[in-house]
Length: 323
Image 1 (cartoon, rainbow, N blue to C red):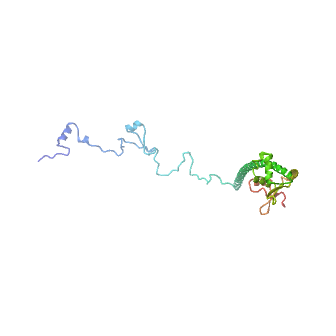
Image 2 (image 1 turned 45 degrees about the horizontal axis):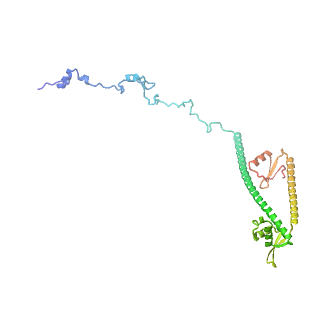
Image 3 (image 1 turned 135 degrees about the vertical axis):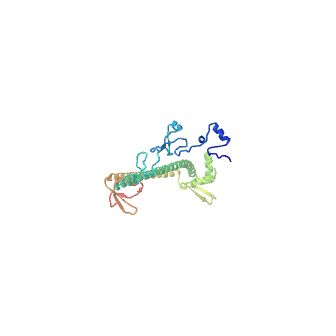
């Protein structure tokens, strides 16, 4: 029967060869790793304060640093108790502030602010009304200038036309004076063309002569004569009578203009007297749309209300409560 070998004996050739080169089973065994050894093969010692590993191994030691256990590089917060959070600027955010960060305003301050806002709104409204009034006046002035220019052109054209018509009417009246105050239109037209050839483009036919005479019915009348079989021109006013009548009309116009100028001067004097009689220290009263007397008010208040647009230009005002 074969001999029984111990557990340490290995009859294989490989075992005998390993013994010959000096390798034993004890040196081939792997020692158990200590649980405190880190993955880099060193034994770190924990810093209880900073919670970091002390660099003992040669790689970490060469760097000269420590490996923080906290991913953000700081100490691991203690879970035993909660600490109040502190603002980096040193301010405690736990302090409660009021809704507006200050003390509540008094009623006097609130009233003053409301009055200030009301004054600002009134001033803004006044400025807007002034701007709108300025724009409206500019538009009206431009329209007035355009209308005035158009009227001047029309007046110039009418004046030129009227001057030509006056000259023609004087010649027609002179022809009628020399014809006992009556003549047919064809004879008048023939005489005009023969005396001045410049009349031909102005009165080229009987119809144009008829229209010219019809525009001056106070000087010449157009009447149909059955015996002649056509219209006849009858002289009503001679040239001398016409000129005298026009002179009287001009004198009457001058008198009318003088009366208007005198009335305007009288109104201006009355307004100046009224302005001189106003007492600037006395209060003012006004009548509202319901004919109720409101007041008294200071003159400055009335002026501000008027400029702000609350009053119209025709508002009845007086310094007497009875009106």
